[in-house]
Amino acid sequence: MNISVIGTGYVGLTLSALLSKAGHKVHCIDVVPEKIETIKQGKSYFYELGLDNLVKFGIDSGNLIPTLDYEEGVKDADLVFLSVGTPSGEDGGWDLTYVYDAVASAAKYIKDGTIFIQRSTVPVGTGKRAMVIIKETNPDVKFTYLSSPEFLREGSAVLDSIIQDRIVVGGDNDEAKQKIFDLFEEIERMADKITEETPEIHEYACTYIMNGDHKEGTFKDKCVSTCLESAELIKVCSNTFLATKISFANNVARVCDQVGANVNEVMNGVGLDRRIGRSFLYAGLGFGGGCFPKDVKGLIRSTEDLGVDASLFQQVYDLNMSQVEYVVEQVKDMDILPPTRIGVLGLAFKPGTSDVRVSPACRLCQSLARAGYDVVATDPQAIEESKKDYPEEKNFKYVETTEEVFKDADLVILATEWPEYKNLDYSKYADAMKNKAFFDARNCLDRKKMEEIFKFDNLGA
Ligand code: UGA
Image (cartoon, rainbow, N blue to C red; front, side, top):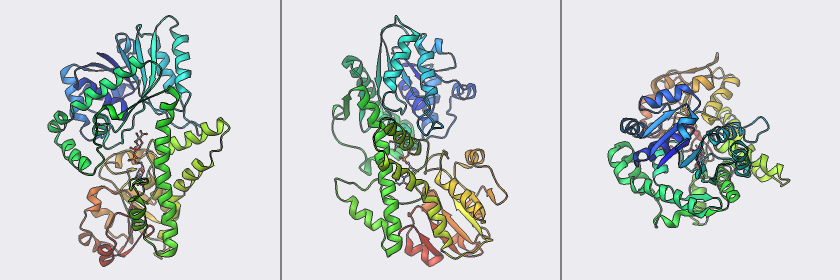
């Protein structure tokens, strides 16, 4: 098939590369020349496990064609996937400028029978508006519009796009919907081949499947066919529900801090109830990234616009945004007085990515610096991106190595639970510190072992 994918972020580039691997001719379109140039060289412009290999394969085979030109990109397309960014707007809702611009730009050149598939996270009602734009731009063309939201996680974008845990397609053309289900089944059938060819994904795939994330059942069991509006809501509600679980765990952690209970133990017990589940009940610095904060805010905005009470969603958001300040207060309670040098391990919003959008770790560094501490921070992948979004200040500097984080520090904080930090032999680093104190803001280290080395604290334990 001739396929066009508009937007080359985590969603778009991963999908383009996989579709080209399956043998389809894929034009991936973006409006940023530097991004297209990098992809043409056979690599991704952001870090994502296993993606470079796939992009290189697509470019070398000639199946993946990066372009800035909408006409070239969509004129022969049977399918047009839309996966452009939907950042937060000034009013807290989604800014849909890129979505509607992309729809209008593509609509000019499409042929009869083209199927549009919306993959970006958008508020309910976007599809209806998009269809009006297509009709206004190209009144004579026959087209179908579907919503098929993406559920991939950064850091495992490739694997999540190969083996999806559900495929939601909303719209009113059953034949077109089946084409999309078939396409994703074709991708899933390549799972073994791709994981064999790309050792790093293979390694991850083993852990992933062993962890029980991978569901049994046939592909058909995972296909969810809905109306357009339901599909749009499924994505936003999934993210907001997961965010709710995290804020719930963080709220419980605050209770635990007051009574000497251990939030990990509490959540282990709660999570064993199959109706609840253990995942996304890990207390810590809170959720960040390009999705949860934006999507919860977006749902609040669109709920209020519909005249419906959004206070539950608002609480989830507010508690999350106050979690960094809560940790700063906990650190102050450790009685290590300023001027104090604090080393921070981790900057990315979660392990496995260089993304620092709304990163709780970066926000923590800024908050500590503003509270008068002298802060140095490092990360295995995210230093360059952090420097752009959170520039160095007089008492906030980036360092390249773990050693530099510990050197002369009065306190070290674990802010992003990268495996290399979880598995560090801390006894080897502690001697370089001025004052041996440690705060685990991700609740992922063994308290007993850490207490043998440091004056130690964490959240709700
Ligand atoms: C999230 C969803 O998990 C994906 O399903 C969805 O497709 C994606 O948003 C999106 O909308 O595009 P992602 O933002 O990559 O994926 O990250 P997650 O792995 O979900 O983590 C989000 C944040 O929650 C991170 O900051 C993480 O540290 C935090 N978190 C997660 C916790 O604090 N506690 C937990 O128990 C789980």
